[in-house]
Length: 331
Ligand code: AR6
Image (cartoon, rainbow, N blue to C red; front, side, top):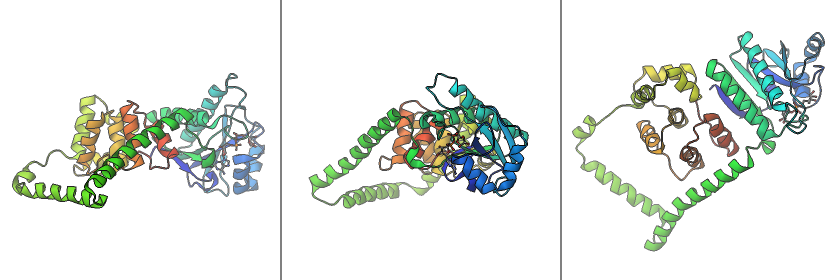
């Protein structure tokens, strides 16, 4: 899972490195900085004292002491004034420098808090976007699992407009489907369940009519075969595809080598997104793995929303899924 958004306390993360949102003195403070120093113990402060501080936008590394993480990468985010004082460049630099340090120290897993988004006042939705943009760029070139830790869900926001758009889309589609069933049940004066049961009986009867032999002959390409064919057709490399899908290399290798591999639904959708398949082809690909998109759950409707808008940015989709408390796409 190359980029994962999770709700947690960063001091509890068992990863190679956690990132600290520090100040230029590197001698501790409030917020996440305070939590990290408390959990790591005195040894961390002693080592920090030897570092001679750190400039805004830069990063320095220490041991993790009593933390489950092996290293702490200390970076200093910008204090947000009005967005016109180079804040974005500096914040991007914090993520880039921290990731470079993690790479230098062979870290495979790294967890970031939302730097600058607390005491330093960077608007949370913009801070999250900067984090996602820089980390996802880095992951296109590097194999690492990076966690963005959201500490306080109540304070977490995707942009107001996106949130409203998706809410409206969910309302329209969710309601449509359910009222169709409701109207039909009222018209026929029977409970909804029995209509659905009838539909199912009809399907079963049709299926039974089909000769088993001819059915078996129709077993067509598997999920894995379809995925590999689509990658070729799109002219992508395997790595481009699994990175864009937020899937790690090991899982992709498994899928590649096992023609009958059955992915989870979020994994199957992640590949459809990576391949930028339109809705109909996404449905075809999901069918290969035994799934469908339905209007009776929010997850599916959110996916449909993004595909219908032609937005195939998996990290933005995950941001929205997270905001609506849904599973994220990827491995
Ligand atoms: N785990 C994960 N995230 C956390 C935790 C935690 N335990 N605690 C807070 N956050 P802040 P800044 C989130 O204020 O804005 C310090 O005094 C929090 O919800 O810690 O970069 C330093 O010494 C917020 O989203 O850092 C500096 O002086 C995010 O971490 C100054 O604050 C960052 O909030 C740095 O300010």
